[in-house]
Image: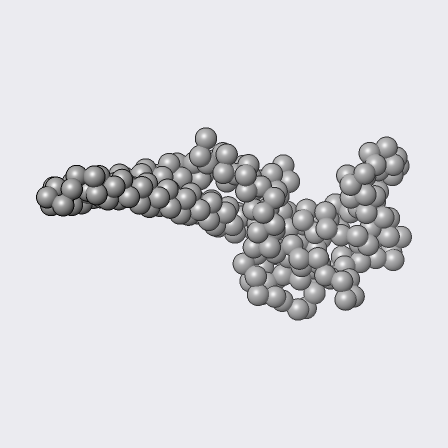
Length: 230
């Protein structure tokens, strides 16, 4: 299971219960608002009887409509909170992986994003200290393992985007095996929650968790909403 699949699995597994609770609270608040407006409408209707029941009825209808709009706004805000919470929890759980799993995840992310096999891996200060060497070693091992006779053939057969990714891995791995390229650990660190940045000269690929989750949210907003609110 790759990093993106792990993220989506965690979103689905951990966010549903919290989403239901947030929506329940929102619905209770919406019901209370409707009741409040109803009582207000009834009070105004009674006080306005002398001025004419028709005017009082129109006022009651306006208040009822306002109550409905307010309830919808509250529910929409609650759903937005659910989505925010789901992706926040996804990031928290990625950062909470044990050291070995975390380093392997970063290594796989680096291999997937690598184009030449000679990029620098930039981590945050904490990750560089605790898992930096492991990430680089595992990433380079993954590149080396990709250099097999059947790998290039598979890349050609697959074609399209998937074939391009596999071809990039094979190209980087070949360079590694020939001694002309190798992923290295940068001395530089960056401010990010987790994840990594790959740099080859002036070209950078941002694989920070916050960036990847933001992009994933944009791509999967409808799908995640369907999971949470179905």
